[in-house]
Structure formats: structure tokens, C-alpha cells
Image (cartoon, rainbow, N blue to C red; front, side):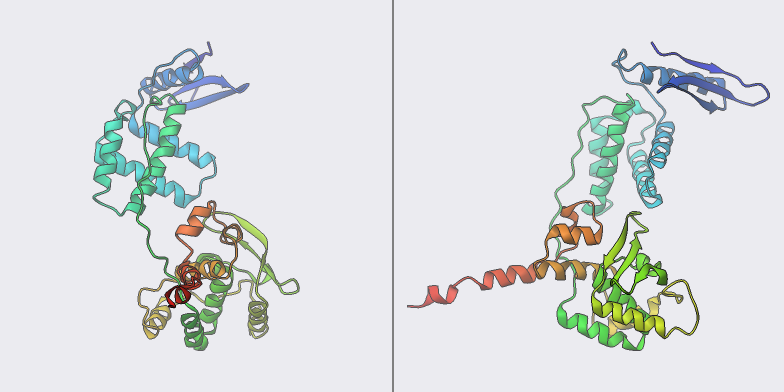
Length: 334
């Protein structure tokens, strides 16, 4: 049996819980003796899980806080941590859960039912994914048993919004009077980068000789040391940099103008067009020209080929081209 103990430190307020784990001494500070004793019992059961087969009852807020800390240590991005905490807050709000004892199948099913009335299915599935990871963590910590089940809901297929060739030409033509915006659009169409990553490009990131660029995603933290660029974009970048009047570190020093972007969308009769749709246009164009999903996934820095195919790739023109190859005319000949 592995020991866990409580103690006080001279001249320091509060109580401490101590234990040995992986050959190292660990400790946790708590404000009161009651909380320290409660945590001691939890830790004792966790460390001796091979002896104890039951579950541990933990306060919900304490459990959520501990989960958040563990995810922070794992290096989860701030945006992902926010999404996780939002899911757990909504779960607590809709189920009024107070402790791990109430993490039951009925409460999980009830949460999915009630949350589904508030949000779209895509958002609900995001909450379900967060809850699945949280439940696995709870099972590892012995906060709940292994009988809980939670599955993603099937989503209806939605058309991917991407620009066709004539719309792309018109967009680049309309934005010629806005040089920096035009170059941003060209980079989005030619690289599939998110707008935040385009804004973060430094001039030193561009390799004019080898025709590539070094990028790092602000969302996923993934980096690509030599992202290939089409020669035409390299030429446009070189001309832009040569015409800069001041020495600067960043490629763009002006802020993205939402007003100009709105004006352009209205001129194109596409008021709902998002800058992110240019990323989808990049992926769709590659797919329509026969580029494999694996290559497109790598360029978009997606973790799953499913995400690349379902959400970012419009293959309708490919389907149309395939159908048009059927010998219908020959079949109808008498």
C-alpha cells in the first residue's frame, strides 16, 4: 500500500498533502485541514487503484479544476482550454451536477438532449467530444466507472462554400486597388493559410530563392519550415517587398480592413463570403485537380483526413465531371 499523509509547514498558512509517485516526492497545498484530508483520501485511492476497485466521490468544481490543470500541463492551446471549460460549465448548468457521484448515464443523455435544443449539431458534437475526453480522464482517476457511453451524433452533409474560377478572377480584379488586401487574398488562395497566420508572416520567413515560406499556425501550433509557394505568388511578394518605402519586419504593417472586405463582398454579390472560405477554395481547387486528400491535409495542417474531405473540400465539380463521362448519348441512340 502506498502512503499519503497530511502535514503543516512552519510559518506557512494552510495544510499540505504529501506522497511519493514515480520515485519522486510530490505535495499539494490546501487552505484547510478538512480539504487536505479529503484530498488525501482521493490521492490514496488513486495510488492504490490496484487494490481499490470502487470510485471516488469528488466535488464537481474541484474535478473540473483538476482536469483543466492536467490539460494545461499537456500543452493544450488556450482556445481549446476555453472550449473545454465552456462544455463543462454548460454540463453543470444543464444537469446541476454537484459531484462525481452524479456523473451518470442519465445525466449525460439529458445534457445531450437539452444542449441539442440550444445549439447546432456541429457545436453539440464539439461538446460531446469534450465530454468523451473528460469521461475517459474521470475513469482513469477513478472518479467514475467504465460503464458510461457517449457517441457523436450523425451530422447532415452541408455544401462546402468555395469560389469558382470566374469568382476568383473577379475577386482578384476587384481588389487590385487595395494592394495589401489583394496580396492577402492571393496568399490565402495559394497557400490555404488562415488569415491570422497570413497576418503573422515576416519578410524573413519568405525564401525567394527556393520559392517557399516558413509558417507556424497560431491555432494548432504546428509549423512548416518550407511551405512551397506558386512562382507567381513569389513574384508578387518580391515586387511588393521591393516597393516598400520603409524597412519593416512584418510583411503587413496595416490592419486587415473589415470595411474594405465588406465593400468587396457586396461588389461581388457575395455578402456572406468569409475570408476563411478562401482556405476552403484552396482545398477544393486542389481536389478538383486530382491532388490527393493526404497532400491537401498536410498543406492545411489538419489532424484528420475526414475534416479535410467533409468540411473543406467541395468536390461537386469533380462529381459533375465524372457523371458527364457516362455514355448517356450512346445509350439513347436508336
